[in-house]
Length: 322
Image (tube, rainbow, N blue to C red; front, side, top):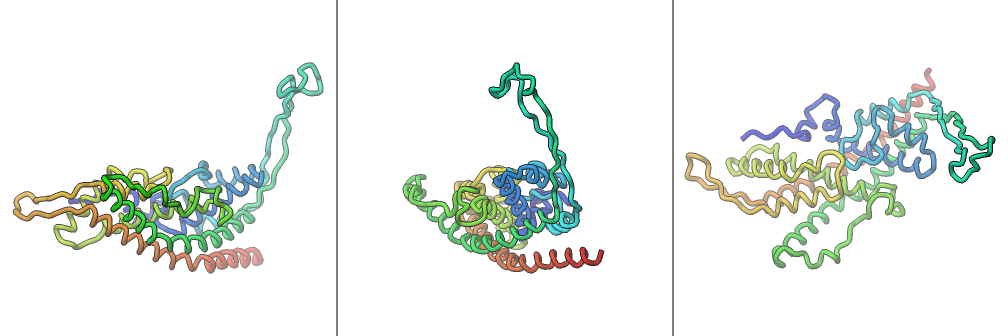
């Protein structure tokens, strides 16, 4: 049967420039999370004006709190090179000094009336771009370490699954298992600000890519086709949270939903042949492919520092020549 044309299945072949296309590149995602991290750091450093400017630049309003894939509208290199070459910009900021009895002030004091003041704040896009580039290097190093933990995550999923099989659906030792990272900035003492959130999204992204690989595979005969159609239908029902802004643990919830499916016997119309669909075998294949995706990304991330150096070198060469 014909595969549904999911947004992520178009990721590698589309050139339309939409978010789905950008979600197909680990370095694209790396840049997205670097930008989000810088927005957070600027806010914590009480530079909310610059943080707001960066978030809204190039139509990325809402990016700061976005917990999902494909958050950038531009290709990662276009985003950085454009930001590097933007001239400084002055932003006019208005603020109101409260008076007239508001905020505890005397309403009868003529010198304490409401007043609107303005001042200008200088934004230097090239410096922001350089900070994002530095964050790319730092986060890439973390991801090289964190992606190596994916096989352990797979082991934990199988441990929980077989424990539930033995204990009538209950994982009695789940309370003894601890997450690798806490969520977002609460774990900032062991890395960059969003390391926990990054790790959760890496697992989501790697699982999504593994599902994509499974659905796009050829071969396996009729059994392979039936298995792909089965995963396709399960993804339609339980995989909606992979796209867009979503909660933590999307990957594990989907795998659990897949493992909860009952095995099925399928007889093709007009044939005496019976094919058994094993959700456990499909989950095993998807998790194995997730391991492969993680290993491939580890190799790709090794080149991030060299890419960053080239970006900055090209920028400096162009700056000196003009």
